[in-house]
Image (tube, rainbow, N blue to C red; front, side):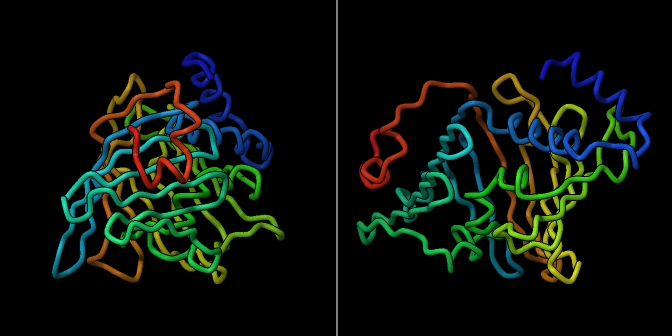
Amino acid sequence: MSQGSHRGLALLLAFLPLDGFAQGEAREIIRSAIEQWRGVSSRGVFTMMIHRPDWERSISMRSWMRGNEDSLVRVTGPSRDAGNATLTIENNMWSFSPKVNRVIKMPSSMMSQSWMGSDFSNNDVTKSDDIIDEYEHTLIETVQQDGHYVYVIESIPNEDAAVVWGREVLRIRDDHVVLEHAFYDQDNILTKSLETLEIDDRGGRTVAVHQRMAKTEMEDEWTEIYISEMEFDLELSDSLFTLSNLRNPRE
């Protein structure tokens, strides 16, 4: 979507009655936000900080993503963790630990568990775009903030969707940046939320470069991710997203 077209959409949405807002258009706002973040393909360098009341842990990583199915994340530091990696292909996930020199496929029973000890789950990593087609979307509010329109969208999973959430609420800016993503359980209780703390340019795109995931019931526990480098729309080899490369990295 071009800059002019999304500005035109912003003006249209600002004056469109909410009860007449098409679900398909709300879905397209979410789709555009995911595509803005991911691109056709991307390569990045980032740091993940896990904070707990009595300790903090910082992990440096590199990532590669292609389309909506393939991703690889490899730990580069600290040295004791370097080489740990996660590969996702479609909704399947494998992890590799150089200490035991073993590739493990994550069973479905473990997908809701913590990813690398953080406040992100394995599902958060593998199902970034399932929300597009497995949910019904409704624009519940349009507000102005810092010179932008912000769309507040409620997403409720279809009855047959393989998700744990009762609903999700997203705040998305008119330049496709997700400002907040809140997750509610089946009893409509807010369980956790992803908040954007800083927005900047990476690889020629405006993206959320600093985000925090926090669980509601844990006041002093959270995980932050800071992106230092990002490149988009690269030619990435098929061999990059393989179990062989997960175990024996060639890039």
